[in-house]
Structure formats: C-alpha cells, structure tokens
Image (cartoon, rainbow, N blue to C red; front, side, top):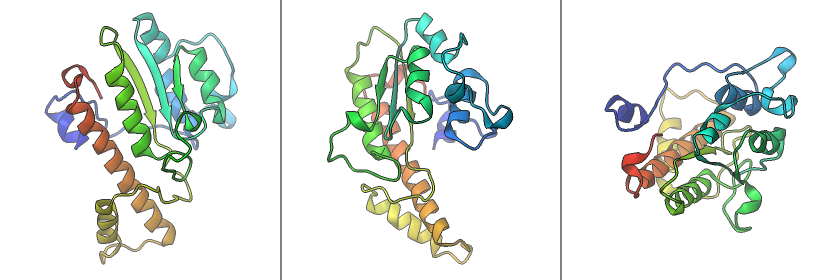
Length: 206
C-alpha cells in the first residue's frame, strides 16, 4: 500500500532498493540519520562516538524550527539512542517508561500498534504552526519474534493462510517471523489510516 501511495504522489516516499549494511539497529539509525552506516569493526556513529560535532538530519531540521520526536516501544537508552538523539536535537523521546504499565507488550517492549497510536495522537495535539519530524521505530521485528499481545484476528488469519500454503517450507522460527512481519505491516497500515483521516492529512509526508 505504501508503494501504491507513493506512485500516486500521495505524500509517501517509498524506496524499493534501499541498501543498509550492518547487523544492528544502531547502524541503520546512523545511516538514516547521518548518512554513515556500517564502519570498520562494526562501529556505529550513533552508538560508539559520543557527542562529536557531526550534523545529522535532526540538526538540519532543528535549524528550520521543526519540532522533533522519537517514539519506540523499547528502552531508548539501549545502544546509546537516547543521548545520540538528544545531542542531535530531538527534544521529545518516548520509550517504554512513558507508556502505562498495562500497555500491551511484544518482543522488545510496548507493541507497535500502541506506540504508533500514541505518536499520531501527539502529532494531532501539537501546535499546527510548527512543522514536525516524528520518527517511529518498531520493537517487534527481533529474534525470537515474540508474539505481540495485541495481534488482531485478521493478522492471525493472514499468517495461517501463508504457513498452510504448500509453498511454505519454513521452520517454527519462520512461522513466528511471518506472523511478526504481518503484524508490523498491519500496525503501519493502521497508523497511515489515522494520519490520512486526521487534521494534518494534506500536510504530512510519510
């Protein structure tokens, strides 16, 4: 659906052939935020170098007076994400500690659906006079692909249809992975629908 929206020019940037080398999320964040992915010995710009004077995406957006926020269902201090983001101008950081204790959880923390819904609510309540950059990161897609507590029935049905196909030759781990990816896809779809039906729909770039 994202690719279809991008092709129609509906405010979505979708990349089919994006390459990011690295074995951890920190290298992906370094690549996305600062244009610097994997380094020798597995070093990561966002995790291993501290507060060096490097200009990254949120620095540039901050100069343009964007409001900036990061939403994640796990612990933002993991892999030095929190100090990295704060050093580079992201002012609002929401992690597991900012959600209710009874929020549904999954593999690495509060579930994607919960995190994305909170991000959309905060965007809609924010001052419309200022542009915003909001980064949301999934906590679901991680070995061993634990089942999120808020998997909807349609995701289970989609998963069961995939794994019961004669073409499916995966292991138990692959079944969990398929369900997790289907869940993540569903959660992104819900988030997009909320953005598109909200007050900022015609001013949002995804």
